Amino acid sequence: MQKEFDRHLYRVLLAATLLTLSIGTVVYHEVEHFNWVDAYYFSVITLATVGYGDFTPHTTFGKIFTTFYIFIGVGIITAFITYSIRRRASRMKKK
Image (cartoon, rainbow, N blue to C red; front, top):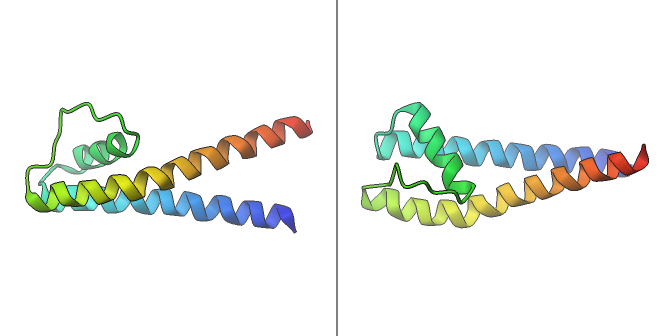
């Protein structure tokens, strides 16, 4: 039963990560008029807390969205990465 729960949790975290990146990509494409690749790129570097500074939101809505996007998205991405690393480490211990 524990394996089913682990698989389910992994899928939920993966779905939340993909949904978060998708929402950011769409919002930046529509609101900031970034092309699709740049919108995706900006979403990834924002949630990875890299922030190169080559793209920035210029609209008021884009700036406010970005602050909430960071607060929510960084937690989701961190949970997914942490869980993935722990899952892989526990699998390696079993071998």
